[in-house]
Length: 128
Image 1 (cartoon, rainbow, N blue to C red):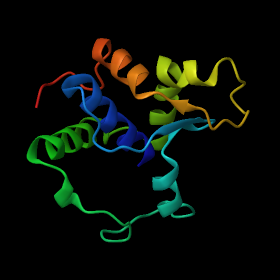
Image 2 (image 1 turned 45 degrees about the vertical axis):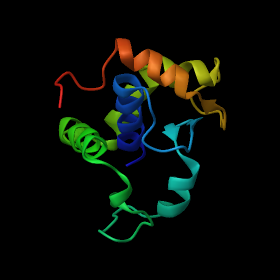
Image 3 (image 1 turned 30 degrees about the vertical axis):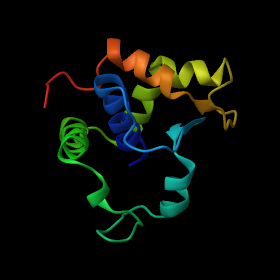
């Protein structure tokens, strides 16, 4: 879920120049993590509808289309595959600044680095 939220944010920043949400992602060892989101699902391996706080109504049709498109495009990948993908990409790697893969980090991955990287390396290739 973290990686799908990250890639949805990346699509919005790179294609529309605005974030889906204000919270930042940090360069954790497992990949980008949004701490407030993590606090809601920590320890859960299966999340059922309605178990997380949030209101989909705050997203407009274009924003929902971004989330739907990212989820549909990346749903065939496992969490480990999505994590490995983020580890190959500059926003996470640059924020980690040479830390080993096992070292903890809470460094913020800047929205500008996300926008710039994914503008040139789209998360998904089809336009919604």
